[in-house]
Amino acid sequence: MRKAPSDSAYLSGIIGGLPFLLVLLPFGLLFGVLGTEAGLPLSQVMGFSFLVIAGSAQFTALQLMTENAPVLVVLASALAVNLRMAMYSASITPHLGAAPLWQRALLSYMLVDQTYAMAMQTYEAQPERSVRWKVVYFFGLATPICPLWYGATYAGAVLGATIPPEFALDFAVPITFLALVAPALRTLAHIAAAMTSVVMAVLLNWMPYNLWLMVAGITAMIVGAEVERRMSLAKAKLT
Amino acid sequence: MSAYSETTVWLIIAALGCGSYLVRLSFLGILGNRDLPEWVLRHLRYTPVAILPALITPLVLWPQATGGALDAPRLSAAIVALSVGVWRKNAIAAVFAGMATLYGVGYFLG
Image (cartoon, rainbow over all chains, first blue to last red; front, side):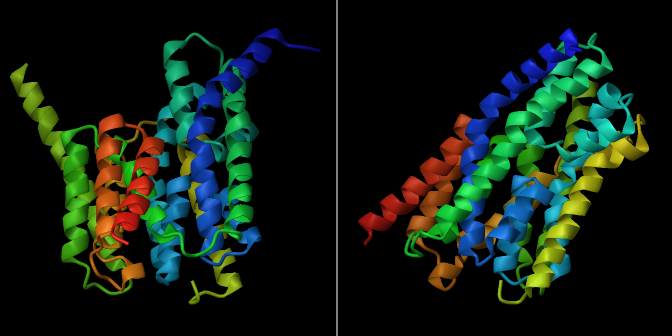
């Protein structure tokens, strides 16, 4: 038996997800290439994209592993990059929280930057939609997005084995990170956090076991949050 | 990468996978529809811009491939990627501009 409303929800989800393929394809390819160049076998490169399914955390782990950082530092840093997803999880719960647990468990696996951004935009524009519609829409979004991430990683890993080491691909990781961070520098608070992070990384570079990364990250997070708090206080005083 | 055995790498992948999944599941699956305190949300907003710049900085200033010496192609590639990213708000454009600068400046300097 066909259920008309969910059919259209699924279709509009797929259509909403399609533009993100342009972003995911190059980053997935790049992760595959760099993972292979770093010496990971195909199974482990794919393991990253299947199980972690988060570009910036995967690149963070890969970079720290090529520096032979301690396992705990690799894990803590890559997970810290993914902590933003707790915020995604919290803010999408008013829309999807009433769905059955098995659906929420599946949706959580597919909660990535792109599905989150697009779903929230749609849910806020159409708050009258049923929970079922919203769930099906989310599955629609993930339908092109998740498989493409695996496919692009696979293609990159196969391709990476054929790229000669003369290409200065070591620097593709910093370039990728810069490209991911730059568009996020939207407010004074974001810029202050990023500047703190850079200064702390230089000042604390003497610390062993890449510990400077954690200290710099936590300090910068506090600075960003504090600047935001003061900015909103100042704004409140003006009005 | 030589510091890890194959098993260790699998452990890293599995732990990262579980950790990331639990972060995603946190509210949607476990904590449910309750509000995060405002100060927690405020800190979470800055996790990517707090960690990634610290990770990038030494890679740009002291690249391993040059034995830690500041290097014109890499430095200019970083500046171009950052500028294009801020200006266009487009990560893909920033990657292409950065890589083009890396190869372009590297070629002209021989």
